[in-house]
Image (cartoon, rainbow, N blue to C red; front, side, top):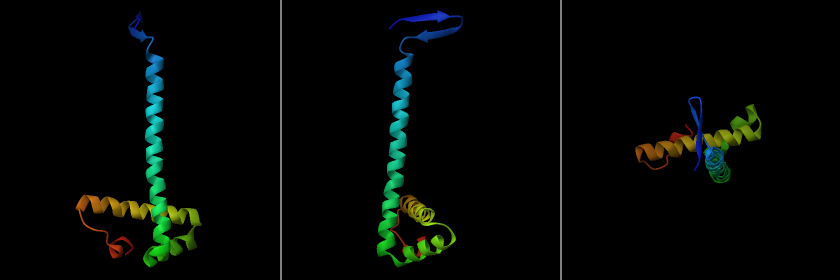
Length: 99
């Protein structure tokens, strides 16, 4: 690896590879975050079909906004419930989630 100095800054011919590597890591991280959001939206669709409390929450949100925002709100509510399940090491409680 060759390096040369200009003033007080050191430039390396490896800098392009480092920047490309950082961009790839950033894209992977964003894809993983999007994958988690997608999974909670899928869980929200599932809860919407099989959980009357979730359906009631969805219909209430849908009356105020549109269906996309309502499904994302339901997904967010399920994500928060999942966080508290992991944090407190307790099973899912429908009445606490949709109270």
